[in-house]
Amino acid sequence: MQMNPSLSGLRCIRCASLWPPADYPEGCPSCLEAGHPASLECLYEPSTDSAMPLPVLDAVTLGEGATPCLAAPALAQTEGVGQLWLKCESANPTGSHKDRMAAQLVSRARLAGATRVAAASSGNAGVSLAAYCAAARLEADIAITSNCPPLQREAMQRFGARLTAFEDSLSRWPHVENLCRNHGAFAGTNYLNPPVGTHPYGVEGYKPIALEILEACGTPSDIVVPTARGDLLWGIFLGWQHLLQTGRIARLPRLHAVEPYARLSRARATGDVRKQWDGVTDQYSIAGSTSTLQSLEALSRSGGTPVEISDAAAAQAQQRLERMGLATELSSAAALAAVSRLRRSGLLDAESSVVLIVTSDGRRG
Image (cartoon, rainbow, N blue to C red):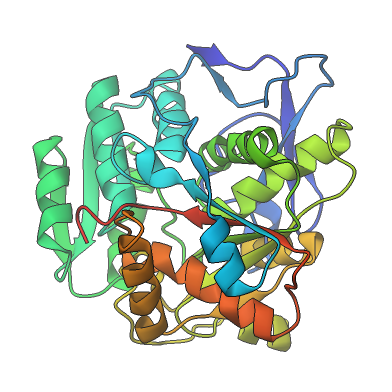
């Protein structure tokens, strides 16, 4: 396990300032000081290697990645689109896409000499980080909410994580901030408010999803991604951006962000992603009142749009997927519900080729 020698630096997605390879869990230092938290994207030296560049080589692994991309012609016909695939990130070792990020992030933590990882999560991220910390022989401190689903809580504890409960989501972040800033913990999630994306080396772990989709079904016209603070959305975009820059594709697919109530659309309208928009939802994996600049950038750079999906619409989509033999978390099923919304709005048509990111499998839903 080693850092990728071709990693040349990081660039701010807001001010474009350049930073040397190092750990920046709070994003761009300049933008943070200016009160505008902004993510950093990794830069690599040109290479003839066809593999997707990642920060950590030979990372700790539990077998994540290479997930199925299932053709769903019956769904495509029902939805009135040309082609539709389900990218089943639920096939990852702990049942969600978070394993891709955890592999890179936990590996970087070990290389940096950390002995513990701290994170705020009441769901898939906490389970994944706990599992990968166990594999890397690191301690995991997870701040959860008091209403954390029992099966999620139990899974984290089985992997050896120490859990601390808080009344609501935002109250967890000062606890994680303290562990990371004052007690040597490596940041496994955001802890700033307003938030920034997760550690950029971790988010890089999502880039191979783009290559896997390309190899399975070519370049789709549209990709639909359940989204909270946009790590997955941004990471997938970075993968497609790399494929475009290296000449593997001629155009970017549009990335659409699925959320349970309007956050990104309101942030885009006001021009300020730092505000909070409260809402109530059972789609706990994409809940929360905050958003991030990286989410808006992924939509803007790819030409995509936010899509609000109610719990009722997500539940109907969940039942449709279950009748196909696929168990999904409610927030994962919301991606299917979004297709109808996008079709009615005219953004999708009979010629569209669409990939839905099935983020998790619902085994702990």
